[in-house]
Amino acid sequence: MKNLLFICFLTFTGITALQAQEETYNLTIEVSGMDTDTGRVFLALSDRAKSFLKKGEGTRGTNATVKNGKAIIYFKGLKKGDYAASVFHDANDNNIMDTKIFGIPKEPYGFSNNAKGFMGPPSFEDAKFVLDDDKTIFIEVN
Image (tube, rainbow, N blue to C red; front, top):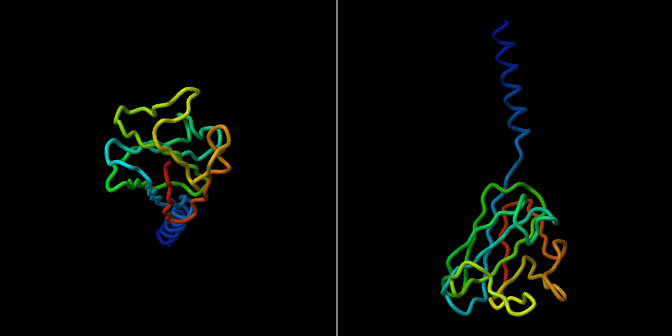
């Protein structure tokens, strides 16, 4: 009888622990609008406003090759929540975003929701999307 109770206890705690694990989702980001297949597309994915467009906690970065004017980037195992993405096409393959005077980008760039900023980049609020299921988003660079 004690063994049966012990087995029931272990089974119950195991089920509870499995239910407590947070669900994760996969995100696919398709970037298009590149005029050339040279270089790479760099992407930063942020899960909070304070880390949007910055390095640090809450931001994941990666890059992808360009083929036929498009790049596809995959993230697996992301937690449910709000995210915003920023991308640029490093066409000359020097691993930085080249800028003109006053920091205006020379290379194509874009944001999730194809958000546009006024006199600067868009806010996290304008670029954010909700990840609550496996999802594909599309970003057009210009």
